[in-house]
Image 1: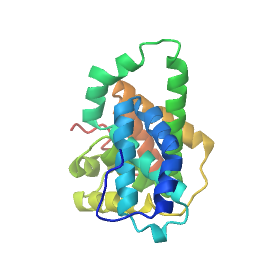
Image 2: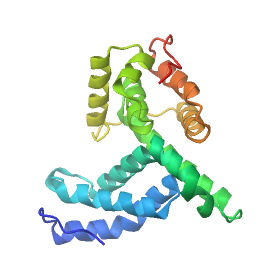
Image 3: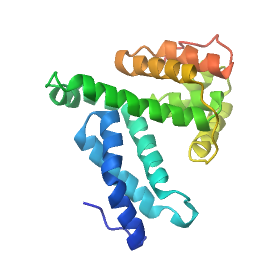
Length: 216
C-alpha cells in the first residue's frame, strides 16, 4: 500500500504512478529475482516521487523507471544482497526449471537497460567509480586504489557521477562496449570475479592499470 506522506502528490501524479506501477515492479523483479525486494523498490520509488519537485520533471514515467532501475541496481550487487539471495530468495524462486531460462533472459535484459543508462549518462571514469561504489559497495579508499586516484578525488568522482546519473544528457552507446560491460558485470555478480570488471572499467576510462585487483 502506498504510504501517506507530508508532501502531497496531486491526483494526476498519483494516477501516473499507479499507471506505471506494474512496469516498475517488472523492472525491479527482473533485476532482483525477488517479489518482496521488488515491492520494496517500488515503494521506495513512490517515496522519492512523492518527495521530488515534480514540476521540474519533463517525463514522469521515465523518471519513475530510471529511479526504479537505479534503486534495483544498487540492491542487486550489494554484498549483503548477494549473500541473502544465495541463501534464500534465488533457489525457491528458480525451483521451476522451465521458467528459469525466460526469467534469466528477462533479468539480463533489465540489467542491460540499466548499464546502457550508465553508458549514456556517465563518463568512463565516473562509470567506473559509480559501479564500484554503488553496485559493489567499495569504500572510497579502495576505489582510489583501483583507479589510481587520491581518496578525495575518488569521492569527488562518485559525487559527480551521482549527479550526472539523473541528468538528461545522453551519449551514443557502442553495442560492443555494452555487451562487454554486461558480461563483465554479470561475471562479477554471479561468480564474484570482480577483477575482469575492474580491468574493463579501467580500459574504458583509460586509467592506470597498476592497481587492478587490489585487495579489500
